[in-house]
View 1 (tube, rainbow, N blue to C red):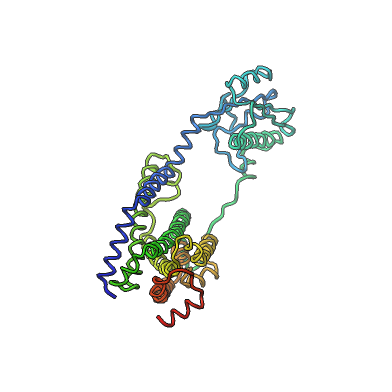
View 2 (cartoon, rainbow, N blue to C red):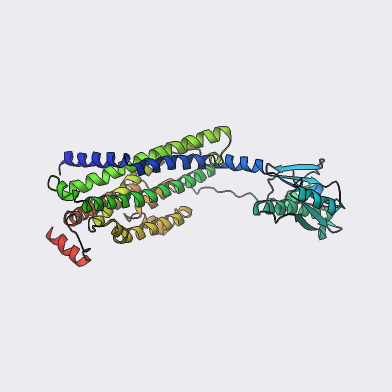
Length: 433
C-alpha cells in the first residue's frame, strides 16, 4: 500500500468536505444550537420572569394560607416549619401567591377579567382535614402553573392537618425524614464518590450519543461518497492510478477527520458555554458536570473508542456503498449495519444503569459492542486492568479483518454498475478477487 496515495486521497476528501457549504452551514447551526442549549436554563428563567402568574387565596378560616412554604422548593414529603408572618409570598420568578383582601368572588372575577390577576383559589371547608381547593380563572391553568399550585397547596394542607392532629413540627420532621442510606465498599473494594459517579454517568451518556451519531452519520457519508464518485465515473479514473484499498482507506480517514473537525467546533462551544454558564450561575448543567474533575483516562478512552468504533463501521459502510450505483440505494444496502448500531445503542442505554451486569461484562468483548460497552465499564465500573486491553486488541483485530474483507468487496464493487449484486454473487466475486 502506497502511503503517499492514501495521504493524497485523505487530503482531497478532507478539503472537499470542509469546504462544502452544507458542512459549513451544519457546523454553524450546530454551534448555535449547542450555545442555546448551554444557556437554556437562563433563557427559560428569563421567559418565566417576563410572564408572572398572580394568584390570590381566599381562605375565610385561615386554614391553609399560613402554612404555604416560603419558596418553590417543596419536598415530596412535607417539612412543617414556622408560620410565615407575611401576607404575600413570592414563590418563584414565575408565580406569586398572596392572600386575598376580599372574599367577594364578583370583585375577584373582575380583577381576573381585567388581567390584574391570573386566577384565585378558594379554600372550602371548616377544618384542615376537610379543606377543598377551587381554582377560578379566565382560562384553564397551564400544566406548569397547575403543578406548582397543586404541590404548594397540597404541602400546606398536609402541614395544617398535622398541626390540627397535635403533631409538632419536630415530630413531623422525624416521621417524614428518610433514614440515612450509606454505600460502603467491601474489603479490598473501592467506590467512586457519589458526585463523581453522577458526573461520570451524565458525561458517559452524552459521549455515547456522540459515538452513536458519529458512527451512523459519518459512516453513511462514507458510503454516499463512494456512490457519488461511481455515479460521476470519477472512480474509473481514480483506480487507474490508485489501488482501491488505498482509495477506501484515504476516504475513510479523510471523512473521519472532517467529522472530528466539526465535533471539535461543537465541543469547544459546549465546554465554553458550560464554563461561562457555571461562572454566572445561569446553567444547571454546571452543577451536574464539573469538567475539571473528569479523569484524563476517561477522555483518553473516549477518543480511542471514538476512533476505533468509527473505523470498524466506516469500513463496512464503504464496502457496502461500493455495491450500489445510485445514492437512493444507499439506505437500503446499509440497513443491516444501521439496525445493528441502533440495537447496540439501545443496549448501551440499559448498560448505563447496570455497568456491572454479567451480560455487559461479556458482551463488552464483542467488537461491535466494545466501543460503547467497554467505555461504559471503564468509566462507571472497575474492570480488571487486562479487560480493556483485551477488548481493544479484539477490536483492532476485528477492524483489520473487516477492513480486509471490505477492501476485497470494495475492489470488485467500485466497478459494478446497474443491478445490485446478490449475496451469492458477492461471495463469488470475493473468491475471485
